[in-house]
Every structure is written in C-alpha cells, then in structure tokens.
Length: 125
Length: 87
Length: 208
View 1 (cartoon, rainbow over the protein chains, first blue to last red):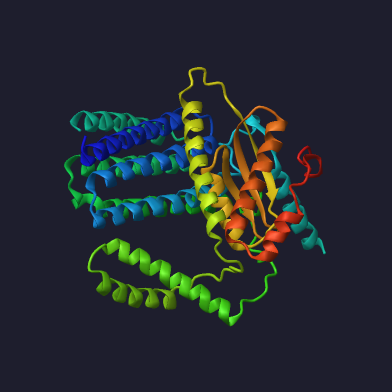
View 2: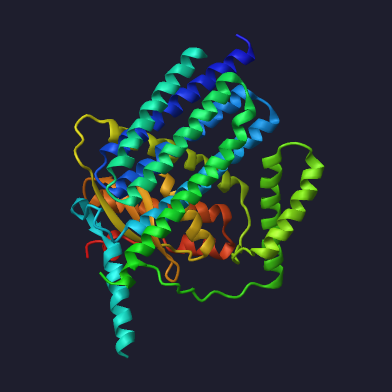
C-alpha cells in the first residue's frame, strides 16, 4: 500500500469518527434535561468531532496553504468554544430553565447570596 | 472514498436534524444559541468533508469565517439574554 | 430576583501591581507576534510580503484596540507544556466519549450534576483564563462563572453519583491548575502550588 493510500484511509477514519461525534452531540442536545448539560454536549464532542474532520480534510488535501487554513480553524474552535460556553453559562445561570432539582450542590447560589448581602450592608452603611 | 463521503454526509445530516429539533423546541433563547452553535459546527464539518472528498480547497476560507461567526453569534446572544434578564 | 443577582461578577478589579515598562513591552511583542502569525496563516502564501503587511495591520490594530494588560511573570517550560498538552488531548477524547455515552445510552436516566466553587491557588488573570478554558474541554466540567477578585471558578459538573465523586473532581481541578502553572508559571507561582496541596474536602465547605 502506498503512502497516499494509507493517508487516505486515516483521513477517512478521522472523517467518520468526527461525524459520529457530531451525531452524538446532536443526540445529546435533544436528550439532555437542561441548558447546562446541553452545553456540555456543545463543548466537548462537537469540538473534538470538528477537529477530527479538519484533520481528515488536511490529510486529504496535503498542501501547505490549505493546512494552515485548517489549523487556523481548529485553533479558533479550541480557543472560542469554551469562551462561548462561559458566556452562555453565566447568562443562563440564575434562570428558570436550569433544573436545580438535578443539582447535588450549588455553591454559586451561596456565593451570589453572599454578594447580595454585602451590597445590602454597604447600602445601609 | 465515495462510501465514506456518503456515510459522513448521512451522519452529519441526522446530527443537523437533531440540532434543528432543539432549535425549534427551545425552550429558552440560550438553548437555541447553543444548538445554533452546534449546527454551525456541523456545517463547517460538512464543508470540510466536501473539500476532502473532492480535493478542492476553494471553500476553505468559508470555514474560517464560519468558525469566527459562530463564536460572535453565541456571545452576542448570550449578552443580549443577560441584559434582558437583568432589565 | 434583583438585578444584582443577574450579573454575578461585579467589576471588582483585584489589587494587582501595575505592570513595569519591560513587562508592557514584552506583552506588546507577544501580541504582535501572535496576531501576525494569524495573519500569515490566513493568507498562507507570499510569505515575506504577508509578514510585513501583517505587522502594519497588527500595529494599527493594537494602537486602536489595545489589549488588556496581562501579567505573565513566568516563562514557558517546554517539558511540562508538552505534558499538559498530551494530558489535555487525552482528556478531550475521554470527555467526548463520556458525553457521547451519556447521550446514547439506552436508559437515559438523568445524571445528577453540581455547581461547585473552586478557589484557585494562583490568582492571576492568565491562570484563571487558561484553567477555565481547559476545564470546559476536559471530562465532566463546564465553566459557569469566574470571580476575579478572589480567583474563584464556579464549575458545573455533570454525571455525578455522590459527594465522593464531587470531591474527587475538585482534586482533579487542582491537578489541572498545577499542570498549567508548571507549564507557564513563575518560580513564585510554582512554589505556591507546591506549598498548598489541595485542601482536604471537609475544609472546603462543600457540605454547606
């Protein structure tokens, strides 16, 4: 088997596994109970799936210019996905769509209560 | 390679359909933002698969734009939602 | 619910020493190198012309939109950096498989989750940012909120069965922080990590 053929097989495997992870992210989006658990699905399998598809694409194209573009897309994805998740999470946190009955503990609520208490104290002072 | 391309297309199509269900069902605008983000990633994956299948790099710059757009999109929706909650 | 609760982090800047002139210059060089690299990657071809035009564009960009000052006191340690990346990639794969399994398993019994507070030992913006970003991509966790003044991360943890797993997870966050600091930290920060091993769970106030 020539090197080209081997690279093609690896690329094909990357594409299929990446697509499967995207599918898992889609299923998770539909089946998970609340916003925060759905965000887990958007953050992890989706990022890895996209990285694998980009890797497969790079292995097929094999030219410098295209690979730099694909690397750039991958780096953007790795850097921005957690930030986007953080922004959505903090916008959604004190919100009725989060299932607090599924939480074992909620230390952010305690922290916010403390903050609100501090502000009340300083307002009285 | 054709069999791989067909498989990947089918998988991505189902995944896209599922995210569309979440976009329609909501319930909150943030759920829709998260699902739209995933849908955009699936579109990026589909374009990359097409480029890999046809060995044609014409569409690659689109990927960069889409990757940035998805981020800007969900961050703006999140800020909008946070402000509306606060107001 | 009042408006204060909706925006959890008040813009309270922690008391940080002002950057020296040398540190500011180093920050600017790092920013210029990074942004120019992105510019060259975007074009991909005509190498030298792109480097020069990229430097011009980046200089204008940084003059118009200055980046926030970041205290980067340490230096890059190559071997711990490599270790961090290998472990990070491994974690990303495990995390994806875990979420895929949770989504696809037949009896979709709802996993319990938790929101925990993790006060980091090294309270710098850089460490806070990197730990938060990495946390979102490793198994089980998602960053919800960060408090800059105390250097505390609020993390959503998925798929927990009991409190023991919660404490195990908390130790995992500290291990991740230690890996990041050993890859990028200054000697002082490294010492702080070594001298403060993760507190035992009962002192963390997890059961409050």
